[in-house]
Length: 316
Image 1: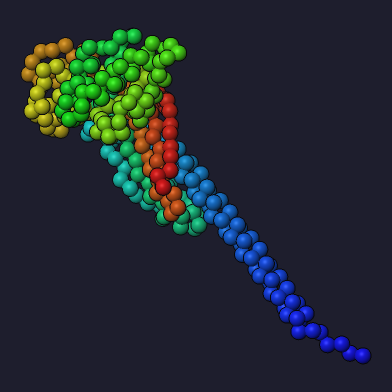
Image 2 (image 1 turned 90 degrees about the vertical axis):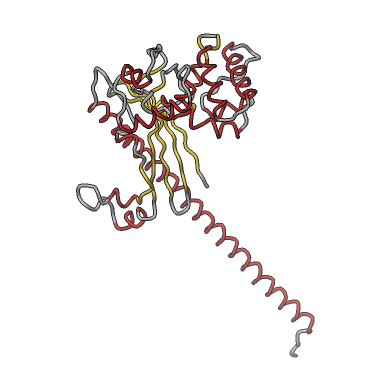
C-alpha cells in the first residue's frame, strides 16, 4: 500500500533543506572573508617590513654622504654649511629610478621592478646644531643664564607666551634633581609636553630647537634667522637677516670670519662653531597600502658615524 507524504511534512523538509543551504553559504562566505582579511593583513605587514628595510638603506645612504663630506673637508679646520651635498633634500622619487641606476642596469626581477614603480622614496639630512639645544639650558644642576636669555629671545620672536618657557625651565630643573618626585628627563622634543608645553607651542618651536645628549655649540653656517637673532647677544633681527643673505653667497670657514661679518667683537668660542657633529636623518616611503617615516639621530666624529637612536611610525 503506497503512502503519500503529508503537505506539512514536505514543507518542513523543504524548509530544512533551505536552512542547510543558507548555513553552508554563510559559513563559506565567512571563511572566504577571513581568508581575504588574512591575505590583506599579511600583504600590509609585508609592505611595512619591506619599507623598514628600505629605510635602513636610506639611513646607510645618508651615512655614506656624511662620511664622504667629512673625508672631503679640511680635517684640521672642518666646516659644515648649507651648500654641501648632505643639505640637499632627496625629493620624492620612484624606487625604480634608483634600481635602474645599479651597475647591471636592472637591479631587480620583473615583479620587484613592478613594485618599485609604485614605491616613492624621499629623505632629508638636517643639521641639529643649527638649532637651540634644550640640553644647553642646564649647566650641571643649575640653569644656564645665557641660554635662558637665548630661549627668551626665541620665544619672543616666535610670538610664544613666556609662561611656556617657564614651564620648560622649571620642568628641566625638577627633572635634573633626580628624586622620587622628579619628572622624567625627556629624550625627544615631542616629550617636552611632559613639562606642560602645548602641542601648538612645540609645533612652532620644533624647527628651531633640538634635544641632544650633550651640550653643543650653534653652527652659524646653518642656523636660521630666528636662531641667530636669539643666540648672538645684542643682535637685531635685521642683522640676522643680513648675515643669512651674506652666508648664502659664501659660508664662514672660521668663527673669525663670522665675527668680521658681524662687525663687532664678542666672545663666540664656547657657544658657536662652523661645524657640526649631530645630524638628523629623515626618510619617508610611500607604498600602495602604507606610508612609513623614520627619523634617526646620527653623531659624527671625523669620519666615524654612530646612530644614537632611530624611531619610525606609519603615517596612515
